[in-house]
Each structure stands twice: as C-alpha cells, then as structure tokens.
Length: 113
Image 1 (cartoon, rainbow, N blue to C red):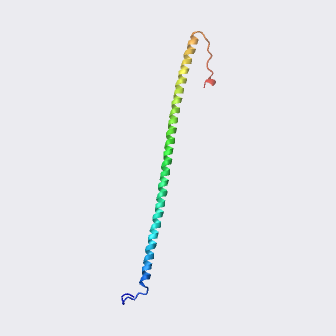
Image 2: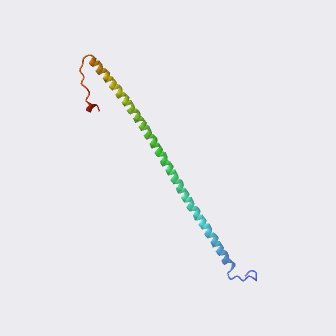
Image 3: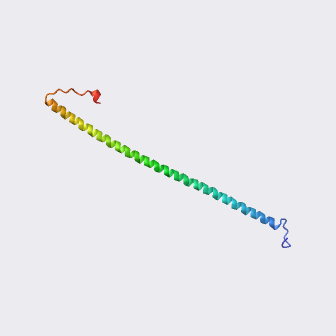
C-alpha cells in the first residue's frame, strides 16, 4: 500500500474502476437521454410540419369553396334579374295584346309557382 499509515482494505485500482464505471454509466445515460430527446424533437417537428400542411390544404379548400359559392350567388342573382326582366316584358306584351283586343287567360297559380 502507498503511504504506510493508510489502512484501506480495497486496492486503489478497485476504487478507480468503480469511479470509471460510474462515469461510464452517467455518460451512457446522458447519451441515451439526448438521443431520446432528439427523437422526440424530430417527431414533434414532423407533426408540426404535417399539421401546417393540412391547415394549408384546408385553407385552399375553403378559399375554393368560397369562390364557388360567390360565383353561384352571382349566377342566381343574374337569373333572378333575367326572370324579373322577362316577367316585365311578358306583362308589357300582354298589355299591348289586350289593348289590341286579344283575350289572354289569367295565369294558373299552380303552374307559375
């Protein structure tokens, strides 16, 4: 033994081995924890990327649907305007024909609805 007054029962290399094993275990644990955190981070990044793409796709669908609805409303408005103009024209023509002496039967309320 080194230093004649030391009365240690374990040799110095055994204590060094225990310290070395402890350092190795702590290093390995830290390495595995870092790998796990990195894997979780990558998974979270992939999840956020996928959700962002899905949101973008849904925004495009909503925009396209809004455009189709707007076009449909414009077509319906135009159809209503055309129908109103045709009704006015028919009434004018009927009035002119009545003025000339023609007999025009009244509209059938069941069919015109």
